[in-house]
Length: 136
Image (cartoon, rainbow, N blue to C red; front, top):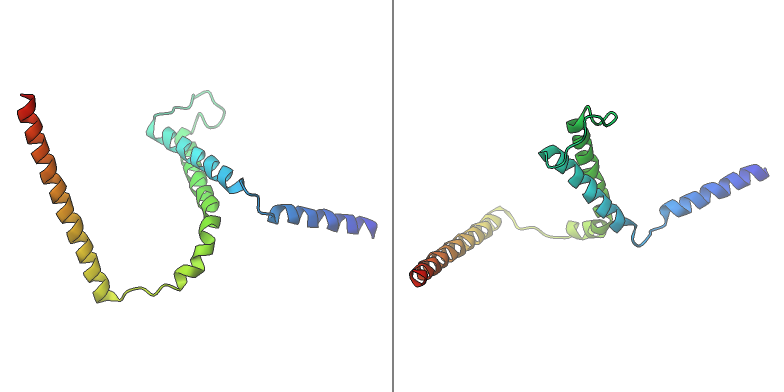
């Protein structure tokens, strides 16, 4: 009976530790997942190479890199999820626009973006022309 009680106490302590929310844990997890993801991407792009003498991963560097990318992506999602979890019920309360009004607003936004892109293009051309005349 005493052994069973001690085992239950150990399990409850373990569950207490696992369920406790540590303040910096997700930040560290986020940084580590970004580093793993970056390492996989560097190997895939060829910026970082793995010596062919390395055990197992030297024979399959591309497979190893893809595993790093997948694990890094999944852990990144897992690390970021607690920050967005409280927002999910609030998103469900939002009343979204209906079709015609939504597409009208989308059209206005794209028109605004195109007008400002053209305006900045004209400013760039004008300033380049002035600088070319000043410089020589």
